[in-house]
Length: 181
Image (cartoon, rainbow, N blue to C red; front, side, top):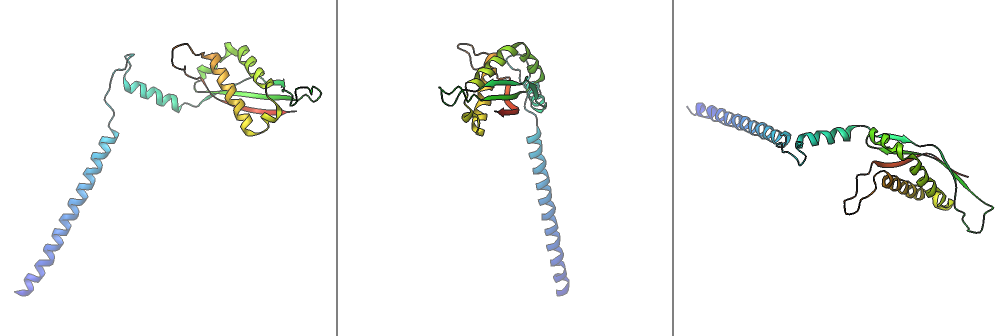
């Protein structure tokens, strides 16, 4: 009789252990499912000020962010640079660059075309105001690119008095060719 009780005790322990393991697995699976449901659940639809739903705005933004950027290649610019020494006109140096403008949307690239003469003028004025020593380091080229971007954006979308800064259609200025001679 003593042997029978010793055999039943391990069976009870194994049964309880198996029950706890099954309950633990169920809790983990149900908890993971609930967490996934809450994380993947869409936000409630709300109408915006313009009547467009929040989902539609988010979907448009995602599509806009996923679309590859467009590049607008401008004609080659050749200009004289400002002399290192104001009285030294003999050692004139020149710059030749090919500028490409990165825009988020190809339609914004088309919107640039009517402003081409103003854009070219602004870029040529910026180029001719720089000294060769300013453009030699990478920081000088980066500063020039930033100045060109700001100038082009202010031509295309000029700021209006009393309003927040307008959206900037030109995201970046890239140089395809950059020669100082």
